[in-house]
Image 1 (cartoon, rainbow, N blue to C red):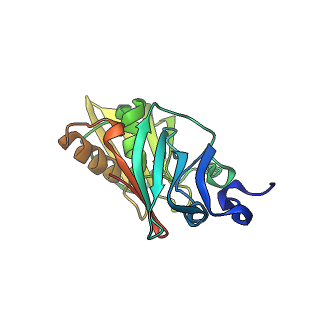
Image 2 (image 1 turned 90 degrees about the vertical axis):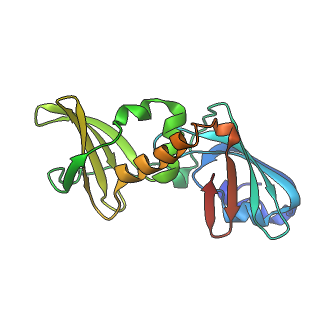
Length: 201
C-alpha cells in the first residue's frame, strides 16, 4: 500500500495494531478510527524542542485512546507534516515586556525536562544567539509570532515575552507543576487521545 502514513490504511481497517516508525506531535484521528477497540498504537510523540518518547496506546470503545509513556528517549524523524516551520525573519526582539524568570533556559538542556516543557509549547523552536553584548536563548512560535527571549545579567535570568502566547511562562508553569510532583519519570505519565486532541499527564 502506498500513501500518506498519517492517513493510515483505511482499505484494510479495522486493525489490531498500528506501529509507526516516524514521530508525530499528535496522534492522527485516522489511526484511532482504524483500530478496533482493544487494539493498540505504538508511536513516538515528539515536538520542536527535539525531545520525544515512545508511547503505547490502547483504543477504547468510545473512539478515544490512552496508554503509558514507555520512556527510553526514543527518537524518530517527525512525519513530514510535523516538520519545523522555516524561521524566516526573526521577530523584533526589542518588543515585549521584560521581567525576572524563575528558571533559566539551561533546564532545557536535559532531555526529560525538555520533553515536559514541550508538552506546554509543542510548536516552539529554540535558538541561541548573541545580541546586545549578551547571549540569549530564544523560544519562538513562527505561526503566532510569540517569543520568549532569555538572558542572564548579574547572575539572574530575565525573560522578554511578546505575542499572543507567553511561551516561557507556559514552560515555567508546566515544569513547576512537574517539580512540585517530585519530578516523576516520564514512564509514570499517561497519554490521552480523543478525536478533539491529546494530553499527557
